[in-house]
Figure 1: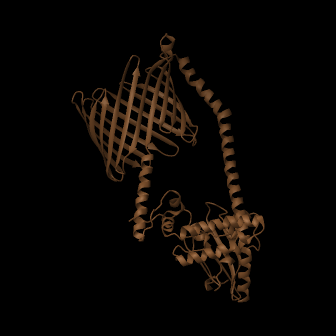
Figure 2: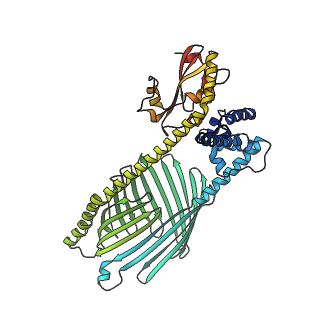
Figure 3: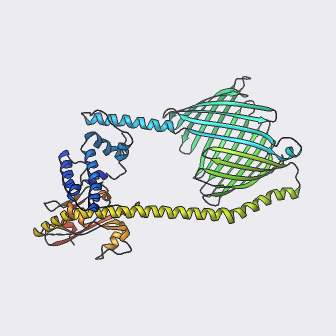
Length: 540
């Protein structure tokens, strides 16, 4: 059985009421009464203090309402606040914890199924051929057009349906096809596809996939043409040759039998691929290389040679947003000189090849490459790059300002909360001093490294003050009448009343110096670590 997920909020509700996740109902009620006496708004006349008390009282009341409700507490313990806020409601109260757990798992399964259906993936492309020579001869500028679209719909964890179609128009003629594929996951290493295509090439087929070893996979398929009854058999093998290189072999037997051998290599900076293909009626070879100059720009070189193709392509592209990339390519081949523009956006692609000339005049060929390349680099150097640098700098500054504002507000809230705790904290401290009991003399919480540095100083240095918080007051408040202090394991300390997280994402440490029976002690605890004092092992 899979382990239960841990809430991502560090069990803040338990931290607010200073409780263990195993606390009884009576312990929860006792903790709530203790904090309610401190934070009840009616105790304060000063408007500012009353506002702070009201805010904190609402927090502890909300925590109590959840932890004192058996159903809500069960949800919170398993899924955290996200579970309570996302609609995981149990309805009528159930008597047995097993029934609660069973209904929770059922509700969670439904949520996962809903997410599964929402995550349908759609891809598509539009190809618009533009011909300048054709236009100059008095004909239309459009040389042809093609469209294709595909949507993948998960129907269960094991089954996925993919539906697609394409349409091609060239002059006065056109063709189209519709395709449907059902993929069934047989196991974690194998699957089977059932496919059907209707249109110019109507066929039905089956293809299987299997991972035959950690580094090798194999595919095998059969397709039957509904027009002439011909049968095509296909087999493919791929193998991981190295950490970033894959080799493959494909064999097809049928009306157009062929065999192809290829490889593909990809790492963070570059990707390259090549293929050689021999068939009964044709042969060819192709290769391409892409180099990433940065996370946003790349260059590409490609070439094809064979019985039906001979061309060379060079160009590059740039990511203009999180989901969008533009690319411009220069192609010279059998058909002539072509510019190709591409726009990719979240699985959708627009491709516009512009045939410039069918002649191979050396001056024209050179100019067609040099002019746009020069314009691109000038635009990149003097317009695009400065613009993106300014925008990234602005985004960074905005994020820093937002985080700084949030941390400042959280620090102010923690300080205000400490002001409300201070009178009771001082009374407890004085009472412990009179009985020679436990007195917290210094407590710091924050950045792991900065807290260690500050442990040698009598006062917090200004350079680390923003990453370290003095929590002496709230810890003295939590000392029991018996002269003990216990912080529970697995509960993030920033959720304790009077605390906050001064350095989100960084490792944090709690330093505590205390006096007990006239002797001095010192201890450190990690953010989620348990702490129980006094202990002889802490004596300085």
